[in-house]
Length: 482
Ligand SMILES: Cc1cc2nc3c(=O)[nH]c(=O)nc-3n(C[C@H](O)[C@H](O)[C@H](O)COP(=O)(O)OP(=O)(O)OC[C@H]3O[C@@H](n4cnc5c(N)ncnc54)[C@H](O)[C@@H]3O)c2cc1C
Image (cartoon, rainbow, N blue to C red; front, side, top):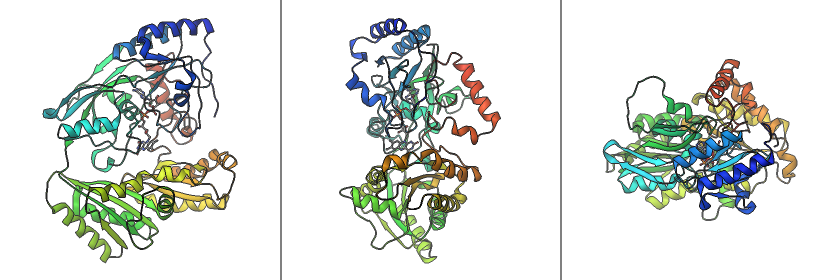
């Protein structure tokens, strides 16, 4: 996908800026090596390829600020990048070669873990999995968890308001942030690193930056909420006839187990088959065949068998009332991990089946069965032979509705239909008053399309916010808003 924004600065300006940036960040903090840059300039699914005169990797907030100031003075935009696992082209510069890429990976210190206030203060470039481990070592839980956690960074998670597998219980990144430190588009540093749970002193500025995909400020550090570590965990794999039954099971489990449900992941039979076929070491946890599966995870701060007893009661009631057909509860951690491996390998398994046109959408919970039915029927009608691959965080109303190419078709020819298929599926999402981007954001991929699904007033307010905070379009131009 190609599209340029902004005017290209002169080569003299860019050369002078490169020299200035190199002196700000020192020899370890920059590169123009095409081999090092190549993976940083490509969106993970290959949908966007960019160019840049330099990648800078500041090691301190002060350096980020100086870099941004220098770029603003030269009128050269900056594109912040974390782990580059985002899936909408937000972290990749455009093709003009006139945007500076700013990687946060060297800003990776844990500044403080404060168990008494159940918080930790961390820099934006910390890898998510490292933060989970650090919290665990301190006897606490940092619950944000997603399949990209080994490479995504907390700054990227915050900037995309990432969700993941435990939203049902702990919320999105938005609910996990107490305070932020942000470098603004003119280079000023906003120190909002507060640990307060209650602070009603006007606009909640941190929320403006969370989910703004690097278009309003560069997150350099955050105060994150920590939770007690769970003392009992139940992980189950359940088979059922249809998605309505999965929703009934969610209600039944809520009645028996309250808010201990942390994960409720829907998996279609086709997804499971792809996984068993392509991911070594996976096996079907259940004996028979079922049209749909749910991976349920429950956690409690109380040790003992109480949680398991409640889960068994919920599944027994659901079984007796014909809501579910079979269920198995993991007997130990390795079985639980095997269940999760199935869920987390689904995107990788899908890669082996050729091209897939993706939709990361949400609709109100009760409408999920109708959405899946209507969208499946619509795409199968216009493109016979396509294979619907539906899975996702059912408890949050968030479905990855992917449409895999017909077997044997040409991949590139199929992927050229991306926009056409999106229009059909997103149209149905819109009819349920849902969201065309439940998780991944807008970036460049959905920036224009979202205009069909938000009111002109909402778009106008978003554009006014961008213009007020970044009047010269210095931060991540062309992403989220025009
Ligand atoms: C296998 C896989 C599974 C995923 N699962 C989920 C999931 O379950 N739930 C979910 O919500 N998302 C999921 N995602 C997408 C998710 O948005 C990203 O994985 C993650 O949150 C992005 O972090 P990152 O560090 O890679 O950011 P990047 O991809 O580098 O950047 C994402 C956006 O944030 C901006 N940005 C990055 N760092 C900063 C910063 N410090 N300050 C300002 N802006 C910044 C970038 O400019 C870009 O616009 C998944 C992605 C993959 C590949």
